[in-house]
Image (cartoon, rainbow, N blue to C red; front, side, top):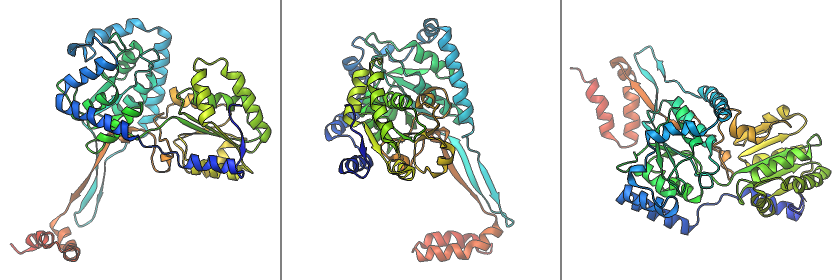
Length: 436
């Protein structure tokens, strides 16, 4: 049996719930130390270190001249993809673009009768680094990562979008990634991955420019590198393994539930697939479907290990308890496979993305629906959100006082400054209010 279902009130069920609530996992000491050394090497030696690591782990014969994707490579990439891909790419770009345009924030001002003006000025960062994982040596290009990271940065108005992705053994990058990048206006693309790629984006090298924001998924070394450089720039989030929680009632179809569990499980042996249902028979039917569908998967071995090691099926007493569990777990992907998903939606407080109804697979959100698929994991949906246009924006406060306004507020400013013992603060007002 891949997964043993438990009732939520059983000792085993309570143990499962406790594990779900404490699943945040920081990087181990060994990973931290290795990444710290890599970052230091890149900071000190620049391109030389980036090339050394890339040759060791990715492309043995890569030269410094080919570290950046050339104009010829960009042009050739269009000859290596078919029309079906271009059509699907165009559809995905349009959906993601239209959705994220609604996220753009405006600057604003408030005025008072005495001449005070206050407000907020919204501006993009100057440069953003977009990290795209290699995808099994380039054989499974993660086109969606290019779009989900690059499009919001473009809408924000970031002047320089720099894309990094590890090359394959031949020192090339998938044409599908190159075409996707060009279709959304990105041409600064570099062949570097893992922690050394993140370090290059953070500190800059002769070839790779430094950026203000780094976004994009990756393995534990990418995640740890982003964590270590996050004090000097912004990152999207500290992301863990992909995860889904499916709330299912008597209306759910076992085949659909199992299919979506497997869609998460095939990502990684550490991926997390959870079902919370009120129906014992559904739990049993899901297990049958998992066995049936596994035989058709290209990543059956990975999915099997994920489900055996981390898969969870819990039988709740009622939907109230199921919703409560979903909120406590604060999952990355929450699927509501229930009879009235829209009625349940107002009761959901914490989730990275919410998928409503029986015909809304999480895969739709990964690729074509429009919302961003870079989402908080490991319970961080309690306080954080999906990547979006705001990730690439910063806000500056605006304050302008007239003489009358300062006269009206002067005593209050000096009183508060005096309480804090900051006499120079108070004097900066006094000097202005002296009769001249």
